[in-house]
Length: 232
Image (tube, rainbow, N blue to C red; front, side):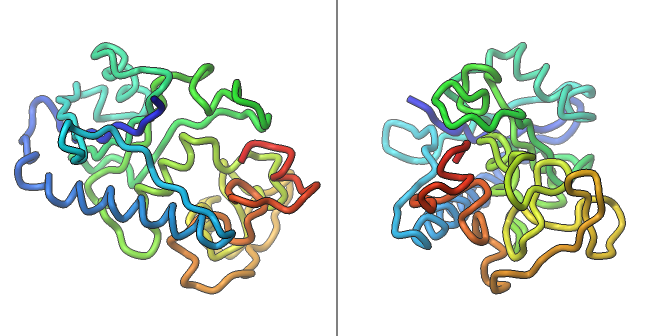
């Protein structure tokens, strides 16, 4: 079925550190799962990341050697994955890249339809990649693994009530919200104008999804709300 495939990727011309980092990858995957389930609990629900697992139910982590182009950009990573057949419509790929090019970056499709054929659900954008580079692995506070994975699942659509910038939001504290326009002044672009970040939830919410359950994730969206009618 639909699953998230964990991947460790390293430069083909560099060191393979998989054995040393594998235990940490498992811990960070578990932390991502806890963040999702703790977020669901806010609205009385239960949700878990559906990982690809081994026959004994342990996290399955693929090891991939990336070309220089695959290390240099997200599009290069996707191209390398395509060549390896890692482009299934029923998979999202959470990739820990052993390099220092990005903090995190991910694919996301502009599609806010609340239907199963939404492009973020697989059919329109197979093999979507959430990439976290070594400098931001397992980061406390705002877990990049969760942030980038949520992008591949379709968050945050630019039509959402508190959408800001490039598929982010402006109602803190929230794992998908931050001052993302390159100028750390507490203002972000939304609807073609600069607007202030709003602090509507406690700082403990920073590792969780959707501050008020109204932009991209809720197990029980308010009746008639934007999220009840759009991609959740």
